[in-house]
Image (tube, rainbow, N blue to C red; front, side, top):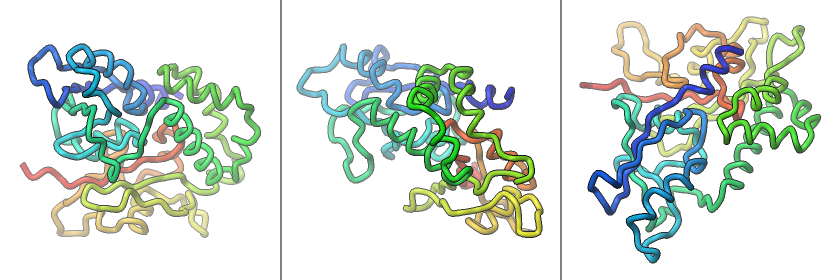
Length: 268
């Protein structure tokens, strides 16, 4: 549980600036959990920047980093690892209030949309791990407790429910399938997600390296080759020998997915 707590409360310093105003009063610095989502802080960002804006300039807000619109339905830490893992904090992103990029982003008019996305991901993950048995046994108030714990950055409130989603019968040796998503910087494909068991047919524990070998072999370095990619989970590079079941139990995001970012090794 200690590792889960460390992952959940690990903050990241983010500096947001308004794209049409560049003088210092219109910079906003926030310390945000890596496991949260950008729309959760939308109200705070709006309140800050609306002081210097005309009402006719305010439409749907969205975020961008160096010309790339940031997908609000990806956890903040995943966005950072994918787009800026080799930069120095604070992470400087730009806030826009006009010209919403419909072709790149989903609309998110309220936090209820984020909550619906979050709960949909949890239900999908539980269908992979337990055939939906755990989440179906929860009441509506339990689902709400998961979301409120994440939204308000209350780990104990969240974990009281989420620990049930991390359990499995000892005789099974792990989850039915591992909920994971592999993100690539240099790809138009959103992410890789397929069925993958934590244990092989001959009862050996599958590792992170086994998963990458089957799903994205280019991420691995062959003997004699120069390393081309970093494989990041929560901003760190786990050993490829790490059992996948352990990673899923201890380094999954609150949505119960293991988010894996494959990014090029920095050249400078």
